[in-house]
Amino acid sequence: MSKKKKVTIVFDIGKTNKKFFLFDKNYKEVVREYTELQLTTDEDGYPTEDLAALQNWIKDNFNAILDDENFEVKAINFSTYGASFVHLDQKGNVLTPLYNYTKPMDEEILDLFYKKHGSKLKIARETASPQAGMLNSGLQLFWLKYKHPEVFKKIRYSLHLPQYLSYLFTGICVSEFTSIGCHTNLWDYDKADYHDWVYEEEIDALLPPIVPTSASINTSYRNKKIKIGVGIHDSSSALLPYILSKKEPFLLLSTGTWSISLNPFNDESLTDEDIENNCLNYMRIDGKRVKASRFFMGNEYKIQVEKLCAHYGKEYGFHREVQFDQDLYLRLMKHKAVYFRFEGIILKRKMISETDLNSFATFEEAYHQLMIELMDLQIHTITNAIGNSEIQHIYIDGGFTDNDVFMKLMSHHFQHYNVMSSHSPLGSALGASMVISNKKIDEAFLQQHYQMKVLQPLIFNL
Image 1 (cartoon, rainbow, N blue to C red):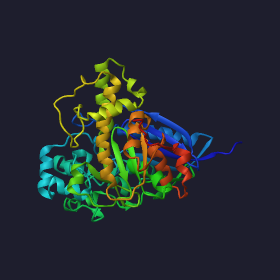
Image 2 (cartoon, helix red, strand yellow; image 1 turned 180 degrees about the vertical axis):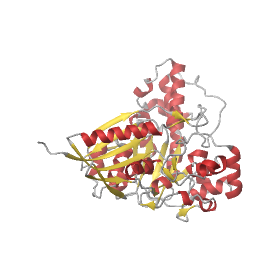
Image 3 (cartoon, one colour; image 1 turned 90 degrees about the vertical axis):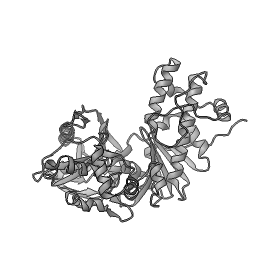
Image 4 (cartoon, rainbow, N blue to C red; image 1 turned 120 degrees about the vertical axis):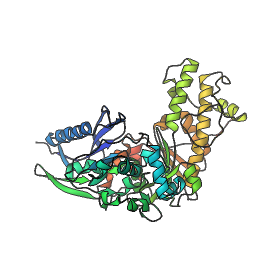
């Protein structure tokens, strides 16, 4: 009989894709499953995660692996999107839907919050969380207290989503740093404790004890000993393999719907100007701050590319084949101006009343112009995240690593840095697997797992 392979299970729960991974002891991916689950709605009819469907999917996958003769499960962990709470009563029953962080928050509740606890800017600066309603998940507890007091009174514990998934396996309620620290409005970074408002509203009583992100709980399943992790926030998890294997300071540019510049080597307090520039802090697994700046690049890119395709009569997807054209770029830079009206980006830039595509003869030309205008904002956000720290390396991961124009512009504008692209479909799952193992990794690790490629600075043939 063949020997069973020892594996760690990771449930990696995104807003859209739910992923399930098995890793062997060398963090090599053995199995990967993706699914999309139908959304449900909350009491106001707003779309939200179907928690029961998610639990069933997790349970079914877990049981299938336990029954599989090829595998011996040694550990389980969870990485999920942040800013989402599951509220439990005394008996451990779920009290509310898993409210969607895009759900609009009642203005009168927000007004009450700032009236009681300080201005928007003050709270944002102290909690390193640009103010964004439900996306600041701590505000959700305040909202429940004043909007649904009868439900609020029944809450025994409020768990961030990664910790709730862990609780399903252990029955133990905990909090951990990476979930507390991601734009929740809960944590005062300078004080290194929950913000005063949390104590004033007596919300601290609903938040379970804080444990390290690397903590795990040993349980027995069907007479098998399994180590259960306490879960991790996905952005912090995606950063972890880099932190564990790289000794020199670096910035990670994580691209997708959001473009997030993460600098684990900048622990300056945020200024008012930082907050206005959409800077925030995430938290490392040891509670140290990570300075980050973000903008809605992927979202804007999609909106604008759809318009370009319609205007030039191209099928959506045509843009993926566009290669960087040096002559086009130099010509556009000669008469640099703003031609695109951005719809989802609030960063400061020249506003124009409508997008002007008539100045461009071809799709390729307009596309290069779009990338130039997005790159201006990207340079701005990266510079903010770097601050005064000694960064020499920039790693780029996520969807835009396949975008030739974007990557060439990055190598051009950051030619004084060592810019590398990294391809890993594992994203935040790998970090979740690593955080509960005590295994040391070295510099070669990223090379093996991430197909790192150095970008060459552009040499223009003028």
